[in-house]
Amino acid sequence: MMVLNIIEKEKRPLDGILEDLYSRSALSNPDQKLFHALVYGVLRHRGFLDHVIRSFSKIAVNKITPEILNILRIGLYQTIYMNKIPVSAAVNTSVEMAKSMAPPWIIGYVNAILRKAVQGWNAVPLPEPKDLIPYLSITESFPEWLIARWVKEMGADETEKLCKSINTIPAIVVRTNTLKTDVDSLEKALLQFAEQVRPCEWSSIGIRFFNPRRPIDRIPFFIDGWFQVQDEAAQLVTELLNPKPGERILDACAGQGGKTGHIAQNMKNLGSITAVDTSTERLSQLTGEMTRLGVHNVKTIPADLEIPMGSEFREAFDRILLDAPCSGLGVLRRNPEAKWRIRQSDLMRNQARQLRMLDNLCHCVKPSGVLVYAVCSREPEENEEVVNHFLARHDNFAIRRNHPEFSGRKGILISSKGYLNTSPSLHGMDGFFGVCFERMT
Image 1 (cartoon, rainbow, N blue to C red):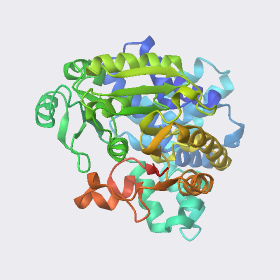
Image 2 (tube, rainbow, N blue to C red):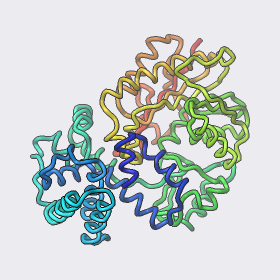
Image 3 (cartoon, rainbow, N blue to C red):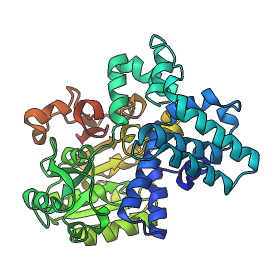
Image 4 (cartoon, rainbow, N blue to C red):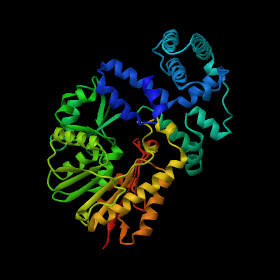
């Protein structure tokens, strides 16, 4: 419940909250799995849970304090979606949580709502399917504004498929660190610790699996640097960049180094990578991650890329990757809180920020060099519109459309315009957009 309350109050990304929590506690693997199931489950299905609560409560949902509302959501989620937990246990646990923070009348309210809801939730009336937007918003648990724009873009059937795929628990996906091992060796090693271990469909060095028998960071092969956790779509962004040994690369907005490590292994530790991020804490974590992976050619620079980089970086890099800050609406499978945090107005604010970064970085690319723009979003404001605005401002750049590294069936991921587009419902991976700009002069 604490995590859900923090999300409500601080609007922080879920992964950062969980990272802070795990650094201060040592949950057993079974407890961590249950904790994950509750937090992610409530966030994935919050819209439907609130609809059920609304149907049994005389108090409007938006008038219920977040702490009590989250207690109701957790209790309902367990009874509706987790058949291994007895209904009585779910209700009693929720009532006990309320006792720790609420007066008696609130405790009675929680008890009454849950006891009514667990008996009658499956008879709660829904909007008519012909009222498509509210119907999908409640049954699939997404904000109406997001459903409306997806229906307009792709139609009702594809929107429903996308929502269902986003609400499905995804596999854990890792990228083989080829500086230390190979895919076959890693796959055999992971069979000791997880279920349904198999190669990825789109990435030649990716492996997917379910139900690890211990936390990922406690698996010996993780500690030894054999892999990084990274979705297939994110791996394909580095393939779009296509870094070569001996080159000078700028990894802008490097974060904790997921793509940095991939770039380094493709370069075989030859050449140099400059990793930039606004957060010195993230860069410190990146440095530790590179040590774990056996990467030796990365230096870090804390910088705000909305401000032009110094003259020493002008035309300094063969390739630049801008994995830009965005809405994150393409990675809702793994970050379900974002669908309740992001507002439609955020998309244009993000676009302005993304363009400032591109404007500042494009001068750092050598002639004939490339600048890859990528976001974990499939929304046009953060995709095609950014591309069009950038090209209108910088006529010395053009989209590179020929990508031999995306040959064969993988070629369907690159559109005729040269855009990398991935989708949970179409490709079984996160929703990413990427484009490779080539500097002509």
